[in-house]
Length: 124
Length: 124
Length: 124
Length: 124
Image 1 (cartoon, rainbow over the protein chains, first blue to last red):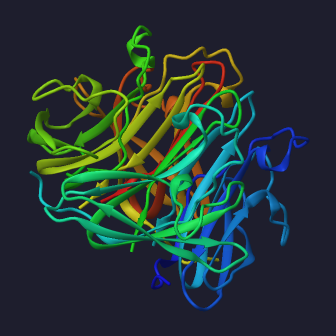
Image 2 (image 1 turned 90 degrees about the horizontal axis):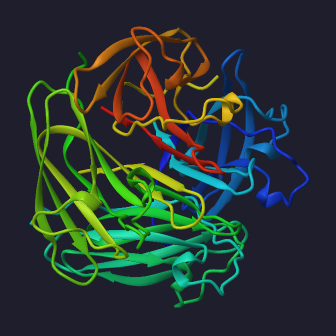
């Protein structure tokens, strides 16, 4: 419908999944999401790399965003090559073979209510 | 007063309207808004397209932003061609025939208090 | 210290000051702020224009950001040519005679806790 | 892993550390963070300068972001040349000798729950 929009290389400097009670309903457990949008007519092959404060980067994690679809990737669901640790500061880059748009959201439910943040990722 | 400012093509990769209690006062029901600003001296004809994770895009939704006006479009008020489902992840693109500025806001009132997020949309 | 940074023309498409209880302490009453930063060695003369959904724009409001200073302008403190109404959606543009940086923040305290949002303004 | 991404000069126009109860656990005391990401293969030497509304800028504060690392700098942990005062509005610039990515986050815990905000810094 709409023409392709976006960039192929993005960065999210903020990353932190609180050490949360994981017995709540899944959408209310504290989590971070990279929202990926692919408006083109071909699938996007995406590689996520995680950066830490005290050790070498981990990745890439391989994600596909199908043509004309959005994929909201929860960092706490990433498994391969390894899960993202809770209670640890990290950052991430997102590389795609075709232009996509990336937005970052965190839901924090450590206390009785929720806090939400969202920001557009940095397009390199 | 001020000269025109903006772009004609925008994307919001994050989208989610919580499956909320809809009996509260309308401005405190969880909702998402695309805030559109048209500083020019002619009306802007805007087309919104919604993208999902598991089906084809829906749209366009037709919106007018009058000359020298702002239009705060609530996604849960969109009706034609179809309402935006609650509890579903989506993304959106906003195309305008003249430059506008787009900002995205979500109010989440699922628990006792409210959470707010806002981010500038991605300008393609 | 640092060289000048910024742009001369900015827009904030989101604007809304909740119809709040104004008897709380001033920094906890719901409000919106345009944070202006002038890193240069000369004062910046700034004009803010407000846009509404159903009437002509209002302004300009004249603000000075002194050399090497930040000025966090609360919209609910603007008085001339007229106060910003509560409970009304609006948008704004910020024009400066020299480059500045603009960030937008809203504190919402309508319910028992506070919600905060912030986003970089759109640089035209 | 991923190629370098970012810019060498950034600004955050919003800054405010609430006058908080500092007896809580450190990660829940109100604070602001500049999240710095260095994806390159060499260390980044970073200078932070703070701007205020009523006095001359303070700095630079010297920070290193090691190669392929992220450094989440809490403003309330800065000590040299002087601590950042609580309850005071400020802004900041971040200069690096090589490209980095900067994101700004505030956690506000003045009332019973937390509020979070985050925004990409302005890249000059």
